[in-house]
Length: 474
Ligand code: HEM
Image (cartoon, rainbow, N blue to C red; front, side, top):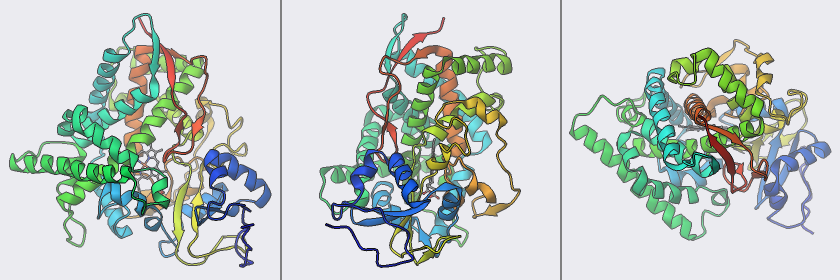
């Protein structure tokens, strides 16, 4: 009854729906990848669907990715898509709660805190955190079952807080910060994009947690200033001393808010990736063995220290992370709100103002056209893939990015001006955790096999519980 008549003949085709307002929300949230692929067969690469009263025009394929990621600032806005969700959690004045040129400068500030020197200092800390974590918990000498998802969640927050956030925050992790993180996380769910006006109890907890978290960061900043501490290499220290190009100060409150944003942006993305990577290794014992052999060959032995520089030569390990992110990217939909009617390149379509355009790089990541046996986990495939380097670069103000980047068929970190700032850190963290873990344990899947995906969360994660069989290595 509620099938909308498409009044604009140039608008992209619309997916029909029966329930007014809700539109395709149910089919989409059960399995967005199937929803996209089924409708792509009917409507082509560009089509519109309705969810909770909003219209989303998805642009699939490498051209679709490029269209969304490289759209002009005057045409589309990430801020208008994300702020209802992000501002209450991160706080005001940062990321999407400020003009884009300020975000570009904030990304530059963050980049300084993710230098190779910082990474050199982080790796031994991550190794130690990983060893200590498992030595205390996965202790059965004969082996047993471990809750992998919980372990990776706790380990990522412990290692990110010890490295990026600073030792003071790590020290509080067992007490207040872990709980505050959970309350913030409960308020960082897709529902918030649509129903930010509802008086949900989780929103009150989220707002309280935001204030307390900011106060914790603020206290650390004040103590560091009072004690004249300047020798820290962490992100907080680098954010404490920044000024925008036009002289506007980047205040301590801004620094606290950006720290919360980094914590939230890096937590689930990295913890689900670590979980999936180890599940794939448990499912593929030959790849697991190849990884151990690589360590012996490149580093000399499985006891050789893992360092930032030595891990650079572990290419199979790199490819295990790359392949995991190709098959199980935690972010499968990237949104921008259309600010003025937007002609879709190479067609007659004009996407109406007020729609959201969506990119979904997973569509090309599992496309046979680009990846043979696309659904098979095969990290070795990357040995023969030469990622195209057009030589062309674009400077968005926070560093140069390969211009042809948005047409790469595998884009788990996005592309263009909003490309992820945490990729290098995520690789360091994930490589260190995975290699330390596989030195400690042999692993295999339980009788349940590989878990399916839960698409109802902000970041796609495995369906819980995720257990794994482990056996300590002699
Ligand atoms: C943005 C993926 C880890 C910080 C993004 C985007 C993607 C992404 C796809 C683009 C969003 C868009 O265009 O709308 C990932 C994945 C990660 C990861 C797959 C790990 C496996 C991290 C980490 C941090 C981080 C560790 C920080 C420490 C950010 C920030 C943005 C972002 C601040 C917003 C950038 C902007 O809008 O300009 N990430 N991310 N991410 N990421 Fe990550």
